[in-house]
Length: 250
Image (tube, rainbow, N blue to C red):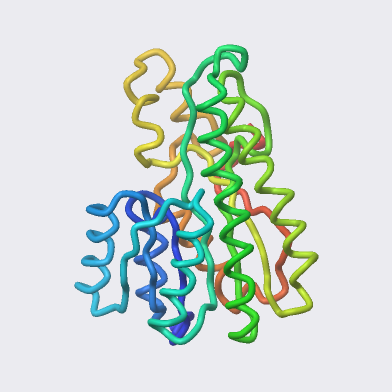
């Protein structure tokens, strides 16, 4: 198994890409610490892992709160003796409005979760990773962190920030055998796109707006995350891997 004996934290692990990655990690032998603001969904992910005879715990976590991130890393290391993988995945979208109509409060919320949350995950995971002899950090950006789109200014800006923050961390911590990469999913079948599905005019266009002509699944993204977390990606750091069906080139 690719991750046998390693410990991974997955933020936003209660659903979507986070849940798929948590399950994938567990199937490959990792101990998984599932973090999410949504306790029922987070506990459900842990139950699924236990049904697979995997090892997992859940910790309710607001990724924008430094104290809670410190507690998350402490729980992982005290429970499993170390930390080897940090998947900073938790994220939210914003109301689809012009930037001048987006409230300052919503801007702050989106940037706090999507960008500050990744910063905090790196900040507090790195010392634990160093103690474990190195490891892998994977951050969730987005197709919309690589190109602009109307009406999602906070999401665009926060996810673009993740890309360069990933490069920064890769440069800072490579000497400690810590690899830092990002994924940039396109349109993936998670709850963040539920509103798009209700739009009878836009959804037929959005759902086919890539080279493959379909949306992706959380499991397809989780496969990419597993690769970046594993030794198979041992010489890959500072990169952003698009998992978008060719959406960036479309």
